[in-house]
Length: 320
Length: 149
Ligand code: SF4
Image (cartoon, rainbow over all chains, first blue to last red; front, side):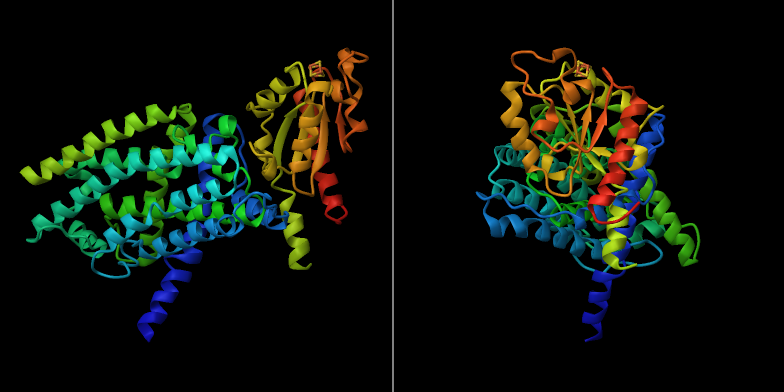
């Protein structure tokens, strides 16, 4: 009984739910603000994502007459729910170890594509031709970036598995424990290619420039999101904020879980700082310095560079 | 203050802008797309964002004199925008036809077809004027939501 209660608390308050949402929206705001500063603009205030969501809740929801209504309405909810579950699995090193101590890495791998799939569903259910174009682009991009992700996770799991006497270790709790004892994987020579590959994976999965091809607002006017408005769009935005929290938190857990003190508030701030650092390097800087790829270029990029890097790590782990 | 009023008060701080080109010479569009975004002016500091889809828009910026060819499309797109929306006519073209006035293919002024809330004259208007137009549009939006400024 109390275990169910704990699980529900983890899902709604910490680290999933409210905590993840607050942090995710904070990352989004900081991202916009830093991008503006890099272009020497002032940028929006830090509460801007909250204001956007408040605004969207006051707008009317329009549903296209030709849309498949049930799927159109369900897709944002599914995307948000998928990420809300995901967020509960994210460990905050030194504060919260993880929900279960077996296989949560695999669960995360399966849950991570849910927002992209929900967006594809919503786009195709909206019956708009732009939604259909967005659908095919999202699909291609997803196929391309899931492959390096799988290899990165495998490399981490195999390295720690072989070091601790097994085959592969898919528990985030054990992965973090091992790193706390033996040093962070981000500084491990065999894992540096995987880290770089993970940094390249982030902008693709978050759908930001240069990989915002499925939603390219200037070409296919936001693709799958075109017909969404009001509270449904707010759900998509919150889902995306949760996803930011999840992928950054996963990056910290896999590569930099190191601690600086035994005191939990300090650890929490340290976690925040590492996530922000990861975001600035892999999302904000890249975003403000590049233009948009074409879908074939993005696909070729993902199946060559990050895949090769991740494979490199995998082979190094296997050989060492 | 009830939750509803609070949400409405907060919501005007997040105006998303949508541009409609009703046959403009592109001068005004360049002003909207670039000048209003450069460091000195920056519309993003009001929480604005240019959005690609009419479904996401709050403030509509219309440029151009409304030519015969685009009239129906402009009206269709404008009708796609969910309420409450505020319409801003940018440039002298949508206001009176400007240099294209009395042309054979001009259906404007735009206020004959669409209720315009703010006029920003100029050919093209200065960026400061565009920003002022957006700020005025925010106040009108608040009024449309039933709240006084
Ligand atoms: S107002 Fe002037 S700059 Fe603007 S669209 Fe008309 S002619 Fe061009």
